Length: 625
Ligand SMILES: Cc1cc2nc3c(=O)[nH]c(=O)nc-3n(C[C@H](O)[C@H](O)[C@H](O)COP(=O)(O)OP(=O)(O)OC[C@H]3O[C@@H](n4cnc5c(N)ncnc54)[C@H](O)[C@@H]3O)c2cc1C
Ligand SMILES: *[C@@H]1O[C@H](CO)[C@@H](O)[C@H](O)[C@H]1NC(C)=O
Ligand SMILES: *[C@@H]1O[C@H](CO)[C@@H](O)[C@H](O)[C@H]1NC(C)=O
Ligand SMILES: *[C@@H]1O[C@H](CO)[C@@H](O)[C@H](O)[C@H]1NC(C)=O
Image (tube, rainbow, N blue to C red; front, side, top):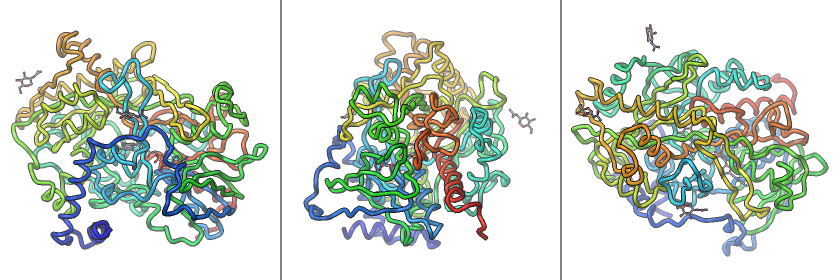
């Protein structure tokens, strides 16, 4: 306990204007905690269901849960839920209960660089995909690991923190699908409302400078960041602020980052308002059912310390449990595809395509370059000390560097199909392979990497044609849902071809003067299941490599997508569930089609926009200041 408090006081100080005055002891404690996290990750055993919530805990065995009524109940305090908690309680007349299955985040979630190790802790729900036919072939049982954050802040407390909104046309496309109010011109003010940009050269018309969520660009890795920028310029890219007027180009990555601290929804939106009198947050509270009378939602059932509790909502129940758990909860409550509910003996309340149309982004982390020098060959203690001074290597996640966008089809203006981003030293080498769930054979391959020097090129597919689903294992909320992204399943193979176009760009970097001058050379790791079948680096070999090591980039959307038609969508453009009163879904699952970016910023924007609409619905148009 003592330790935790020291760590806390240190981070708090670091977080204030007096950066870098943590005592030597405090560095030791943070470093010890980092070491412990690193030591424990290999022996961690994932849960295989949610049994845990049903067990009563001795310490709290006689706690009671009194049934109370609130105006709003928010289910899940993740990226979206965190924003709602803050914005709805700005109205003193609203009372809000927020229920979160997880706990307070651990202090180490503040440090973006260790985020991947949190995957192997109880702060991750611990899902895997179902066995995939065309991808995840280098993962155990052909199942990709499928992490989701389980704590205040949700996945924004465990993610890579990359701030990439997407292309303006993505939102114009949403509007054209029959969703008024979601064009780029409509949503831009809400991106800006949440944001407090702290970096130089921001395209001023497109960023916010006084919102609650800090966005920062970490300092460069000497020589390396610049070389990556220059190499792209040699390949014809211009430097750009990709969240500004022109997405196309190359840029240093912007992060959800407040000095050295992860700017999660918890950090930016929940923590500052926790003491509001009209807000109650209940952690370790697993919601198992939405209570619906006729076609009106009026409350929820949840488990806390093994006890079944209920809470009532006089105005609205808002589901923000994320693109995997919100559909599960809807189906458990009788809202979903008729056949799916019938299969599990769940009484049907509304026949809607819940869990259908799952879209995800996959990425390929399997191309590596080695410079002629090492970077950051420090002890953990030294790196932690640098972190308290907001310095690399621990401030960004995965030693990340830059990002670039590529449009190969040239069909829709400059909407990119592929994004490249780069992990840099100290790359976590085989730890990354282990955490992504690769087989022992591929973990061995990653052991040939040098974590202090090597960088990798990550290729991300932005608009996959492959579509999957979230379905139920059973009607028991103890069971995990079934996640089948169905990667690389589009009949014409466009997804794989586009990833291969990305591979070709990644290989071209080897020919640039910028790479040559830093001695950066393409290196190869063994691909035991491809090397024996195909000529190394031939197109069939790359297809094999792509199917083997591509992983989810953890961006599920569209499982409760918005649209005007209840046959093909779950919520309307106000995010109200079709045919049900007083029930909205506000999370990543409502996006009707994928974006040319990463969904955290968009999910924040969605919650900002709907918060305003909820206020207008219940209070009328703003008379406020
Ligand atoms: C490892 C990883 C890396 C990522 N990297 C990036 C990145 O760099 N940039 C980016 O933009 N996006 C990234 N993402 C994606 C991004 O974090 C998500 O799209 C975003 O967090 C989704 O927000 P959400 O509100 O929909 O769900 P979440 O943030 O997942 O929130 C859901 C919350 O609901 C809680 N919950 C779920 N079920 C229940 C229940 N039944 N009862 C009570 N509570 C419940 C959960 O515990 C969680 O707190 C990443 C995601 C992951 C997992
Ligand atoms: C997910 O995969 C990991 C690694 O193979 C395994 O340890 C874990 O038990 C799996 N979990 C589930 C729910 O299948
Ligand atoms: C790069 O910028 C120059 C100068 O503004 C412009 O002429 C050129 O078209 C740009 N190139 C790309 C690929 O956008
Ligand atoms: C990469 O470039 C180096 C020169 O910098 C060259 O020796 C090497 O053969 C190239 N590798 C490939 C696969 O083209």
